[in-house]
Image (tube, rainbow, N blue to C red; front, side, top):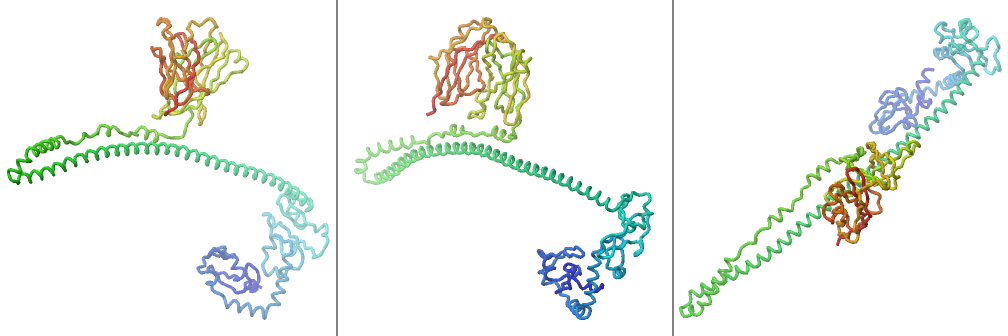
Length: 559
């Protein structure tokens, strides 16, 4: 009944109800088939899979009235015949069919019996001819409980297909097994594959979870780094704005002062000008009077004219203070270069130790570290050990922080050498030192290894220096240290005195300055209202040294 199939909707398989023709020329029921497929002016045809654009909605699609009339006539005259065909088609669909059954024509399906068949699959084997439609199949009557041994199908493991008893001779060289054995074998294999697939699914789920966690972690790191960038840039912009306000306020103050002076001069000049005008008018009136009247006022008028003329001659504009104003220059070229050179922080270079300036006593070693070339250093990590410790695989480690607080000129407070003092060492022992530099971006490589032998207790020939604490004093940003030790040694001894200082309570590098030839040495560039500790280092050309007493001074607070 091809006509019956053509009159049914391809979705609901019922007779068309309110049939509508799509732009692709296929027909669907409007409700609910077409309505369920319609979305945002598009409908996808279930027959040709084409996405059709419908402008204005389903109401604009044409309704097929002729098809509705044919369906009505078909229902009135051929409904019983159609129903019989449908029952036959539904019963035949229960069969377990092979490829041969699927290739049968529609006419052959109508003649098929209402039985359940297990067809031979030998037609899929290239060497086997196509089976006949009726004689090459093993048929089981509907409701039969078993199949005879002669008619029981087999399974060809070589071809991976079912085969009937009539075609076993075509599978002579193949591995043919009973269908029950093939079923058990394949069932076990499928179950094992399902377990493997489930385990693989679990692994994929674990990897997926790990990737999602990595993505979330990456997002959190990016968010934190973005906040750090904003914080650093906001702080820099804040400093720039503060400087802008300072410069503009200074210029405003200069303008107010100059305007005040200009207003005072203007008032004086206007007063002299007004007096001169009045005196000139009065003089003209006197000149036009009679001689007796003129002579009465002429002597006094003459005096006023001379005095006023002298005042007018002495009036002059104040000299402009251009030199002072022109000296107020803001030059930010270096700062702009520094801003242009801003980039991500990189790990520092390997530290450099100035061996020629290093010295030692019986329990102290002074290592002189040269300042880094460009990159910022947050701390130095010193590793050192003796020969005995090296044999045991042991070493000591000390972390020394650096003071990176900039001055008003954006330069480090101390541009000279930095000294690391390592105390409490064993006398008459050989030590090996190496230093690493570290900042937020990472760790540098190691410096060169420096070998140093501490002295015996009575071996040093360098006199111990002394700082006279009672004569020392400090101001807001400086401190003056008093010592006579540089004058107590002769020039032939070749002893150099260096003043070391740092903030108290902080395990940082010691700043080093040469103690000049005066008894008083002043250190500048200190922070106000801050406590510092000072010590004097005396060393000779052999690298032998002695440390003085430690003096603590507190700088004054700014008023």
